[in-house]
Image 1: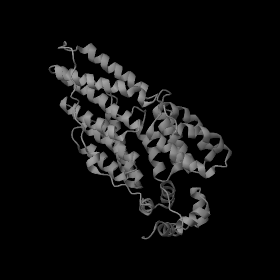
Image 2: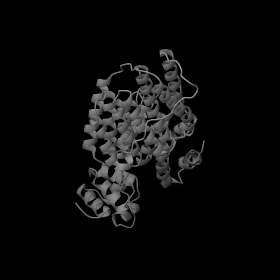
Image 3: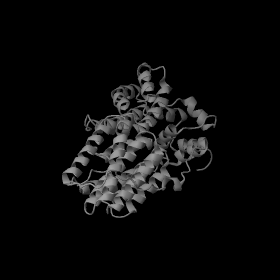
Image 4: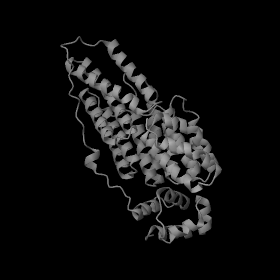
Amino acid sequence: MTGTFGELLREYRIAAGLSMGQLAKRIHYSKGYLSKIENGVKSPHDSMARLCDGELGAGGALLAAARSAQERAVTLDRRQVLVAGTVLGVTLTGGPRPVPDERVVIGIRTTFEHLRRLGMQTSPVVVLESLTAQVQTLGALAGENPEPTRSHLLLLAARIAEYTGWMQQEAGDDRRALSWTRKAAELAVAGGDHEIVSYAFVREAGLALYRHDPIATIELARRAQRAGPAGSRTLALAARREAQGHALAGDRSEYERALDRARFHLDAAGVAPSAYPVLGSTAPDPIELARGWSLCDLGRPGEAAELLDRELIRLPSDSRRTRARFGVRRSLAHALAGEVDQSCRTLIETLEDAAHVDSATIRLDLRELARNLSRWHDHASVREVYPELRRVLYQRI
């Protein structure tokens, strides 16, 4: 099948034995709007293309055609993605100091854990300055002390630098997020641990995912799985990210294979204690959350909403950032499934968390949700929730 998006959509629709009105009803768009899409009067957008792709079993073909029609295909510059930062060259003033004992290192780690818990509940700007200072202090102490203290300090600094990169992304600064991610990898290598080298590619794949670049997401996630020695948990998170990239591309079979691989590695990882802070998501089941996220991208919003309804109940109340992220995604899934009242009800539950965590990445989904809800701007539930939605979208903490 070849041609414009509208022509391709018509071919798939006819092959599925559906009238234009039947397809419009299934994807919750008007027959008139669908007619304009098929006749080339209007250009399709991603969410509408995903719904058609999923409903007609197009395997990503309609999504790819929509992106081509809109001339919105992202051409990610690999050199920018793979730019490496440099290890901090900070020195402490005031003369030589004694070698920090184990209690000092534990105290620094405890302080970081407090900052990370705070980062789960509030704006990234609240914690970024303290996180940066911690990495600088640890890097300087490592440069002044012998082994094995030097390596312990570098590895702790690497974990904190990785989290700092995540907070920079949440603050909306992808350039600094990338720099901190690469810095974390360099600190880890200097400390003799290559685990973060692999995980750094998972983080970079996350940056590509939020730019809606499936090719770079998949490539970087696969690179994480090939980069070198990595534990089962890192391999699970890398395969999970790869699955999200395949879903973004509309490739359900590759998505399912990658997600099965992620589940296998996560089950193998268990809950073994670590001398250093854990990398990545601490959600009870990050694989199922990713499944709910991806089903929406695959044009199966009803399934996504049902799964996320179930998984969000399992998240602890103090995980506001995670609750907001997947709560917004759940409301978007309900809206795409045509469940407007349920979308608005779940959104009301989520907006307070979204306001507190002040996340640039969550606002991307909020904007998509606002655009979809605007199709029902005369609906009572939409009118009720829209002022608060706009306030959270445009807030600045």
